[in-house]
Length: 185
Ligand code: SF4
Image (cartoon, rainbow, N blue to C red; front, side, top):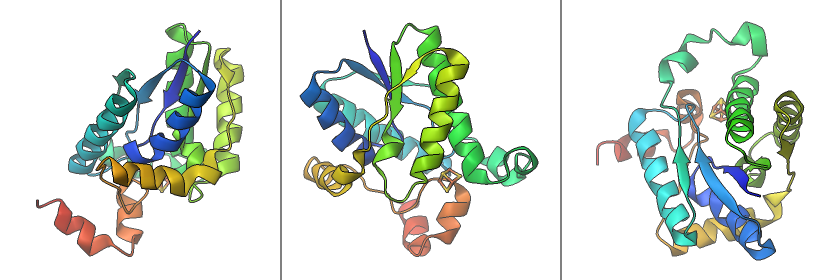
């Protein structure tokens, strides 16, 4: 039986992958992150996730595209209350549904490695989607390995971003100007 590991980026995948490898879990990685803007960054993170997948010799499935216009529209605020609630729901809904429809026995996400994410909200969303689609959510608290994973990413030369992903988080980042400059390279 195979797990579907939703991955938000290469660096955040490193520690969770090392855990899954250690425990002998068979998994495919899954890219569905329409929250990453602009498109240049969406492509850059995807390329680096492919490098992380290659490092462990696992399959990477790619779905979706950059949806900057949707984030900017804020059409979702009435339904979800916040952009992050929508963002978690959108990504975990697609992941759980994909897992159920393609014969995976379970799913989890590398979002659970980041101390900067809303951990409990992600868990709650995953549990809801698990029930909705009838596929097991495997909970891991990967946060203790966050630094280790970032170091592993540095060691294999992965790009390590300095903002969460959406255009709003880019604008809020203290590294905004530096990030914008990096898009020109
Ligand atoms: S801050 Fe991060 S989690 Fe929140 S909407 Fe933006 S990309 Fe998604």
